[in-house]
Image (tube, rainbow, N blue to C red; front, side):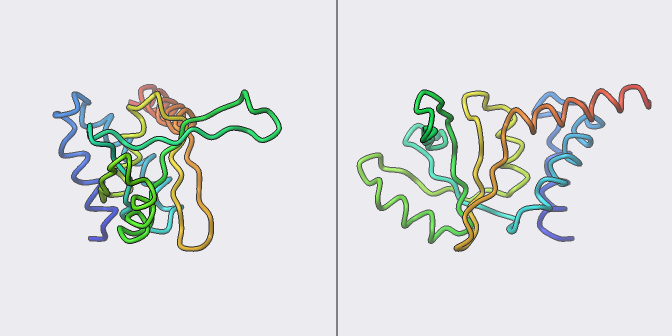
Length: 148
């Protein structure tokens, strides 16, 4: 079983702890797996603040500085995250490695974050917008209700 399959299985098995019915969690897990398949790694590392929350960065649009969004960066390796953490020593960030499925699932429950940016080795990143991910999960859940 590959790492993403293990993460999906663990998510579905933990449905009760999230107060989500297992059939609904299966649908959500399928959406998350589809997104995770487009990313390069089964695990990423995020920087967390001393309170345990993800370290957020506010980005502004160059042409329209009043347009801002809050993002979290997911680094492809602990080493890359640690290099960034060392630049932010005054914030005392901690590096936390998480499975890609877990990151996507947690993103669903964090409306204060606009996007999760999965960085790749030397290639920039892939942005996953929280609202789009949430809408996709809702659409799949609604369409499956009618099929049941």
